[in-house]
Image (cartoon, rainbow, N blue to C red; front, side):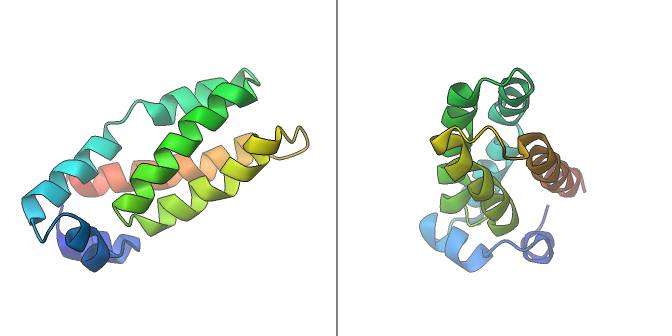
Length: 114
């Protein structure tokens, strides 16, 4: 994974690095931690089981971490699911949005393998 790869992904690497006090190694370590974070799978399981309360907890936690790391595409995708979950909106297409989130998560993981 490189800063350039993350920029191509859409991350605001300058902001992310600023939040890590310019420490590129720390930034990459934190990005890897979000790639490995089990909350993505747990979110999918909660959504599949229609447990909107648990799904909200996972999505809200991920939103904060993604925002802090300035991983903007994933942050935007997860943000789009948080408010409907907060309202427990049963008409929202959670699984469709989760597919988008998981696709971006997978793409980020693939970049880390480079």
